[in-house]
Image (cartoon, rainbow, N blue to C red; front, side, top):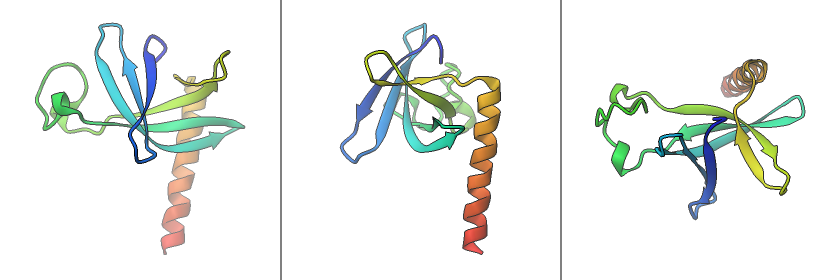
Length: 115
């Protein structure tokens, strides 16, 4: 994510959609599924949004994973830039591992609450 731009889009039903553009100009949309707080910082779980170009596993070869049918999921750290706006940046390896553990703990809590 470090070499990508992002644009936050609102889609009318309070969902936050983030657009990332890579170095080749390819655009990818992600919906913010949840915020995971870890060590006083916020991390977003972002789920890839299919658009018309990437529907039904078209096998485009762009590396988006659509041909495998895999869900495209990112974890991004939310930081505030010098203009006071939130930005999504790539977490460090240590932050990523901490977020994974926190997410797993949340899933365990939900599973135990259902029993």
